[in-house]
Image (cartoon, rainbow, N blue to C red):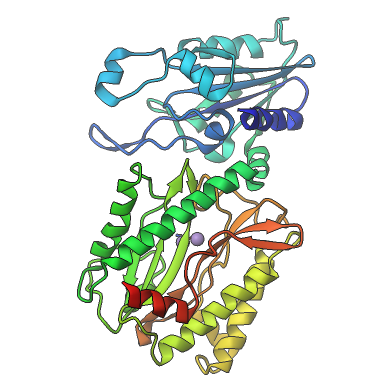
Amino acid sequence: MKELESRRKEVFKQMKENSVAIFFSGVSKVSSEDEFLPFCVNKNFFYLTNIEQEHSALILVNAIGEKSVYLFVDPYSELKEKWTGKRLTFERAGLISGIKNVYSTENFETMVSLALSDEDNQYGNIDCVYLDLTSKEQKIYENFFMNDYYMKLKVDYPHKEIVDVYPILRDLRMVKSPLEVQNIVKAINKTNQGIAYMLRHLKPDMLEHELADHFEMYGRTQDRTKLAFSTIVAAGKNATCLHYPTQNDKIKDHDLILFDLGFRHDHYCADISRTFPVSGKFVGVQAKIYEAVLIANKAVIKYAKAGLTISDLQNFAIETLKKECLRLGLIENEEQLINHYYHNVSHHLGLDTHDVSDREKPLEKGNVITVEPGLYFAKLGIGVRIEDNILITEDGAIVLSKNIAKEMDEIERLMLSY
Ligand code: GLY
Ligand code: MN
Ligand code: MN
């Protein structure tokens, strides 16, 4: 609760005097006819409220030296609860969010016009409105998107400045609190258990998606744990497609199998990749490619620290992979690396798997990022990626996923035990 309050306080600190910030939880998008996609709450709204119910809104008012917080949720409806499950009462919404002023969404527009009216009112003269303009596509009501709301405000209040609040939230969300790190660690540990469960079911000739199903089944047995993203299981050549979607091929005994997967814990994501030999043993060129990726993975982790940018990590990964691939005879010249490494080495991790970030901003203490070098040789039918999740500290990084096997001998021993 204290953390939620301090997040809101941080936003207030960065808002101009005489301004309001408006956030929406959003509503589900239609998938087809009367079917809806699963509801996915706007993460900036959630970060400030801990509320996940559709059609809710938050207003922060920073006026005449006074800072007020208003939360709007739909009135409790027994009938809605009968159709779609638990609904918030105002009391419960107040408890979850730590916000005292909880009102019905029916009062939302009145509140906005009251705060923004040019006539003298308790809020003085608000001349600036913060909106999450980076999420212009977000659906906030039936047939009404963030961009529509932006246009409406421009028409209704032509003299008010409208500012994107996203950079403020992005910078806040990039620095994780100890509680957020704890949630990520729990997600990683659950993911590690899911990997073990999945590998115990691995048999040559099973289909890739059958293996993925075992991972996901483990999650469902653990409080119906949610996935951080769609599970990727790719055998042999299929692993050279980064977000390989079909997963209908047989896993052969001589294949390396790449899995890229993660669970959530309390909304926070894990994002882990590992590459294991189905036979239980890395052989020939498989071992060489694996070695090059593992060296790059460890080198980037050792290099990462506050003050560097993600681009610095990427350049360092490329240099390391070039050197190792040349040393191991995997490429003939440096220019060839681009054919075998074609993605980024890191992204931020948090409420979203590819979490909000400013890639040019130097890393700072409290950032959680992935380190995921890979090498892909389609002609050899081999793709290797080793992805860890690390916490940036003042002078280095802590590997949050250190318990997930990645040394070759460790993996071979593990495979023997299954
Ligand atoms: N799972 C997607 C990624 O590693 O970025
Ligand atoms: Mn991943
Ligand atoms: Mn990743």
